[in-house]
Image 1 (cartoon, rainbow, N blue to C red):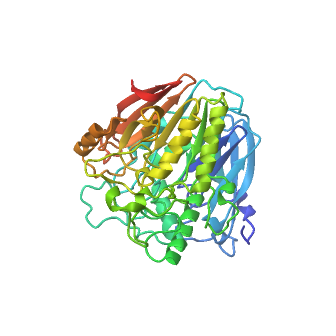
Image 2 (image 1 turned 120 degrees about the horizontal axis):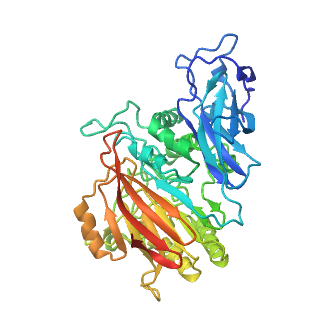
Image 3 (image 1 turned 90 degrees about the horizontal axis):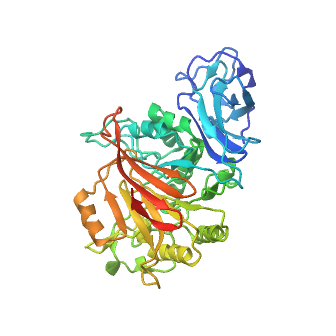
Length: 512
């Protein structure tokens, strides 16, 4: 990609600062492969090392990496060198191949005499294997100012096999003028440029508790809106279309630079105007994850004016666009991909759990006012109906939906489409997790009233921050909702809010 060659002479040279201040990460585990990630920080004064003219940080850098069987790196399995390109913010994405399936490994990066913190990763099981257990943490929404990341410290202590991050890794906002009640502040402006977005990721990744969560296991990630702009929809956001597309390209580039993603995510488009983010992740015959992208391909929210600041809740009676059968949250191509994947799961008796890992709440929320969100699945009822019809027509053995976005915990029975034959039939189980730190403005009393009107909603909580950990076996799925006692306290303890179980062959969560 870049024009200049990497500075290979740095292989053993002294480094006068810590270039690994943003930590390390891994992701996208396959039976024989995993992605290793880091992003190098330059010296604060940007001075070159002796003999480097022009300064080394003005071009590509050569970074060494090691993968080992043991935490002390005495038994090296593979090692190599990778370029950290200036054009990609000196980020490194190493796709290690030829690994053994179902194995834990240890890895680290080296630049000169600087060594990154060590971390753990693992490969997925072989396709024919039925593992005894998979432990998954899923989480989303970590606004810096709203809370410390104690939840990540507890999530890392769960010793997961895989972390699913479902969106809003950063927030594009500047610190509000009124800082009352905030956990912490920052001095960054509203993110508009590539530099702005890079700085925002550097801010978040400077948190040691988040770094520990990245170091404990591989991550599989997707995005939501705040990686770019609140409530953006496909190619439409605030301001002029041309300006928004430039902003979006900068934001998407920064997302790629800072996530453990494969180069194939770039979809052959070096200008970051398209990203191949919906994909599948298999865990042997135990689970098949369908990871969705509900931002890039969606239609604009119903009854939202072009260029407006955001989407507003609407009542169907006052917004005919809500009932337009042609509108889609996923885009028709992704819809077809998902429906075909679920049908393939149904035809493959070896797949125990089909998992929809996506951004928000799938189940409907019927309110007394008749108003509904236009930014979530409630704002795309025809698209949701098509998905539920696909599940009803060719149901996989067990389907579980994971989500985030709304800063609230929901546990739901996913019902057959309203108005269809057998509409009372439970098709799937849903666990929509709360935020790591981002606040909810919805009082619990409103959720209590909403739950009373929606019998498919088994739990609805708005005031807790945390994550969900799922222990998945061939016979059952156990989901534990974990919450921190005080999100304003970086050393907060955590507690179990609720626990639910889904039995193999019996759709719907049961309180445990």
